[in-house]
Amino acid sequence: MPDAARLTCPFCHRKVSPPALRLHEWWHGRRRRDGQQQGHVTLTRDARYEGSLDGVPQTYRHSVCGAGTGMPEEIVRSYLANPFLYGDLSFCTGCGDYVSKAELRWAETGQPLREYFDALRAAATPELRAQAQVHRRGGVGR
Image 1: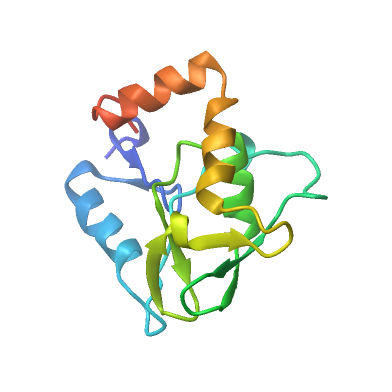
Image 2 (image 1 turned 135 degrees about the horizontal axis):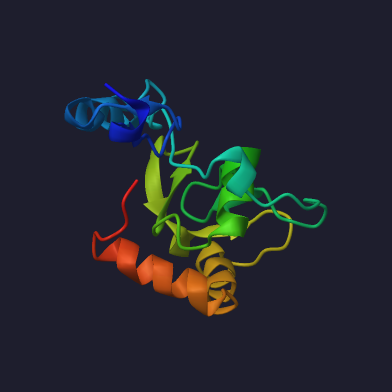
């Protein structure tokens, strides 16, 4: 199959045939023994935030269980470039499950994650907001 007819996986960014994409994405979404998905959606390397991460919080605590969870750099750089990329849930290592960002606070600053992400989304460019609206309606191709 020609590369142009293939779709890009939002997890690993490999080209996959359209009939195989659903199964391919399912594999990335499967849960590991610790409860976390095999993989997470990220932006491609060239689309991620490229600046310094000094001062950017990367570890959060769950108010229910008290556990701290570190966020991988590729996810941090992806959400900094597009704060609409992820939904309301984030993984908690203590609970072994995805929990609401309303229950999480950055360990470095104490700021609630939901508030932090709301501020990033509010500061987004009009173009990025429009793209996020189209994506939510299912109109963005891969």
